[in-house]
Length: 61
Ligand SMILES: [Zn+2]
Image 1 (spheres, rainbow, N blue to C red):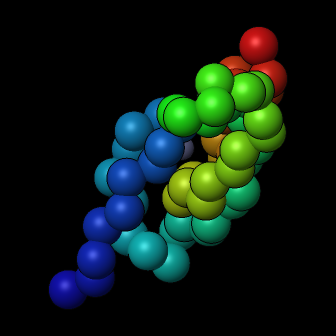
Image 2: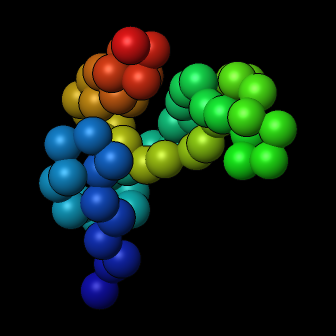
């Protein structure tokens, strides 16, 4: 039995071997200083679909 991972963009749950890790960057604000900065995080996306690119575009505002 293989582990299921949920795509961060389309929310599909798929086996780990059909997923890939993708880093996205987004504007964030520091909790203490309130200064804007570029943050990033690593999510999992469908390996055979453009979910990673779409999610990055959604975060660029
Ligand atoms: Zn997906």
